[in-house]
Structure formats: C-alpha cells, structure tokens
Image (cartoon, rainbow, N blue to C red; front, side, top):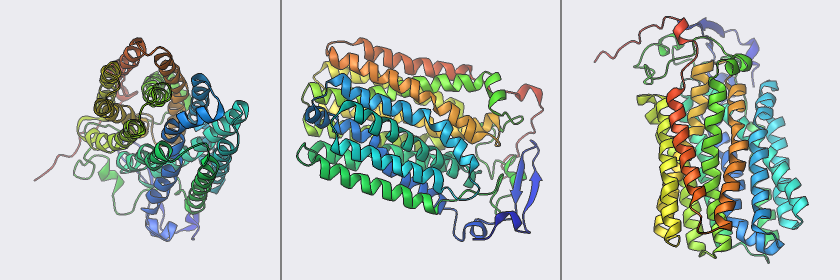
Length: 456
C-alpha cells in the first residue's frame, strides 16, 4: 500500500465556508481497492456485535432460569453492558484518532473483549463473573468496535455521511435477528455452552478480520471525482442544501460544550436511549415472567431490531429533504407515540400481532437518531472534531439506557402498572420538543452563501 503522505498528487483546497479538503488522491491509490470496502467491512463488524443487545434480550429467559437469577439480576447484566458500551465511545474515538492508517488496535481489542464476554456467558452462571466478563468487557469491546466502524465510514464518505453511516449503523439493529431466532427456539441449558462458544468464535473472528483490513484515510481526505467547493454550494451535487448548512466554524469539544448545543444533543440521546432500552428490556422481561411463547418473543424482538435498522436508512434520506434536526425530532415523536401503543398491547395480554406492530414502530423511532447524529454533529461543529464530539454525544446512551432498563423492571415487576410506559412515551415526546429548541451555533455570526439552484 502506498504511503498517502508522500503521494505528489495530494493538495489542499478550501471552500466558501473555510473548510479544508485534501484532494487529488483516489481511494484505489490509497487502498488498492474501492472505498466501498470501507463500508462493507464496518458493516460486517457491526453485524457481528449486534447480538449483544438484542440477542441477550432473547436469551434472557433461558439464561436467568439456568443460572437461578432473579429478573433484576438479569436486568443488571443488560444494564451494565449498555453503560459500558456507551461510556466507552469517547475511548473509541480517542483510539481511532491515535491510529495512523491501520485500525487493528481498537478492532482487535474489541474482538478479544467480545470473545471473553460470550465465553464467560457460556461457562459461568455466577453473577459477579458475568457482570465483569460479559457486561464490562463485552460492553467496552462492543463500544470500541462501534465507534471505530462509525468513524471509518464517516471519514471515507465525507460527501455521503448520512447514507453510509445509516447502512453501517442499521446492521447494529437487524444483525442480531439470527441470534434472536436461535435464542428463542434453540438455546437451552443443555446446549448453551456449545452454542455460545461457537457464537463467540464467529463474532471475534469476523471483528478481528475486519479490523485487520480496515484503514483510515488521510486527514480531510475528499474523493477525487467530486469538487468539494461546488459540493458545498451546489444542490445538484449535494441535495441536502439548503436544509443542512455546514458549520460556521470548527467547534472542538470545549467550544461545542460551551455553545450549549452539544449538551442538549447529549440530553436528547439520553431520552432516546431510555426508550430504546425500555423496549428491549420490557419484551425480554415479559417473556421471562409471563412465559410468552417463543414465537411472540422472537417476532417482537426481531421486528424491533429490523425496524431499528430500516428506520436509520429511511430517515437518512428524509433528512436531506427536511433537515436532520427536523427528522431527528420526528423520529423521537414516532418512538414516543409507539410506547403508548406498547402499553395498549400489554394491557390486552401482549397480543402477538399488536406487540410486534408497535415494537416495529418503536424500533424505527428510537434507532433513527443515531445515524442522523453523526451528520448533525459534523454539520454543526465542523469536520475536525466530528468523531470526538459524536463520541461525547453517544455516551448519553449510558445514562438513558440504564434508566430504560430500570423502567422496564418496574413494569415487569408490577404487570398492571401503566406508569413506566407513560414515562417512556413522555420521554420521547420531550426529546422531540427539545429538538425544536436546538439551533446551529455560530450562524448568526456569518453571512451564508446562497446555494446554487437546479437549472433544469
């Protein structure tokens, strides 16, 4: 592979907003292959780690009974995993920025942690051991892989961040469906060791192989076939104009926090994550305490994950037409309304069709925001610190996820309680309202150029 820093064709240009671009180097010159590999490899790695969230929910009834755990002990395993996965995102962003070209260090570390997590779950029923091995190490490993994959796609596709991040992020939703089916229909105390050990080898192998092949581009790299100066102002090249304005100036983490908008994004992620984890934990807990048929559990968790992935793809396209902030608010509104639908399904005996339908709506609403946030962070705070700023925002999932699991525990422990569903729904509605108050920082200080209109 050639050393990108010595390629004579590279030069730096600046657009009307003052953003810098490194142009003149093709993806094939840097990689020896198309940059589409830098979507396919992160997609495969995200597919592999997705079972830790949705798959554990499907496996929870079997594992809890086999290990003699109470519902709250089983929820502690899931809740601590979510905390560690989200809280490790700033670490993942830091490690990514420390790498020069190869991304083996964070990806192999993530693969080792994921292997340890699943092997621990396969061989130990001791709660303390599982909390350390599965929740802490598994959460950190999944967090490192998640952030590395998102950052890689973000930097290789600067002109198509929303769409490409949605493709990779969607795998974190629907990728767990095969394991959900296995956990619902096949997993049993008698075969859990073989099944989980085999799964551990597959997950670690996929993540490690992807990590060995993944690369990051030079700083500010831009694809040679697109003129970045025209892309910044011409809606024929960039259809998201004028709904998504570029950053007025670079906002490193400190300045982004002082603007007030990064903390607000953090709060909105807390609210969104609370809904998402409430849904997963409620479905898993109801299956455990109410002996739901495997078909009901598999269908509900399966459509929740599938809709989570599909929602990211749909909203990334919609955001180009109505703006990322507005689309983010709409997704939170949908997710909030879906919680009241789940309440209706729960009060009618968890009817399979109603439960699956509202789980799909909830998945679409709660999952969409994560892929939109990458583009929103870049648009509002600039290119230089996109990965770091997104890592800070994403860590809000640690707070919200833990809160969602606790809410679900209250529902399952008191089956006739409607309060937690109402709280979860109101969190989504509050998040949607907060997005209306979010404003791109710094725009009042600059004169924005008018976008080039279509001439057809």
